[in-house]
Image (cartoon, rainbow, N blue to C red; front, side, top):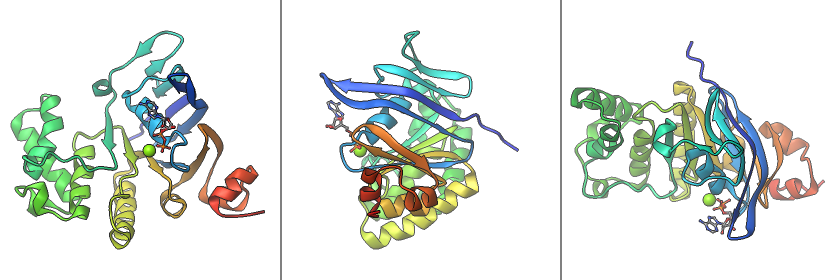
Length: 247
Ligand code: ADP
Ligand code: MG
């Protein structure tokens, strides 16, 4: 069995021009786990993900996958994003409109200098996983929003990342498509067994998808637990209010 080391985020803090947006954020994500950062808009979820991805550096703390240190504030260590082997999928699909589906997927593989035959093999495998192999030569504008989002996911997994980072990937879809995409995403994650950090402001989405949820409020983690733990025993009145329970 493949065993990936855990992702550990240890006590990261971050300010933007004197305003603190993250305070001592700390969590670990186990191999194959579906872990969700849940909280209202502006609470620091995307900034946390950007720090894990290396798109932003925290001011302090450490981020590592197993023994692989991505960021260490004390030692001035920071690994650039392309050295972190992470799959990123963000809210806007950001497919390149002038490239076919296959070429959109080829792009990250070319960056990694994979030979053409290996690229083709991986592109077909990833498109097959998301059920869109027959659309490989279409352009993004010829696809529905849901299909475009699947292509974006295929591009996130095409180079077999160790950890998949998903930032509100379903929020541009309409409600019906979002329900379908949610079920499909959960199946895919389970089938691949890929360690996933998922960001959402949607409590229902978090509850239905996650192995564990970290509730984020005002740049701090208020509670980390299974959906049942967070729902049934919210750690603070603020968590209870956000989850929609008043007890
Ligand atoms: P979330 O994803 O939970 O909605 P963000 O992580 O995007 O929250 O933002 C957290 C806070 O940090 C917000 O107040 C936001 O305005 C601020 N912020 C995020 N990125 C930047 C930036 N690059 N420069 C200045 N402020 C930022
Ligand atoms: Mg965000």
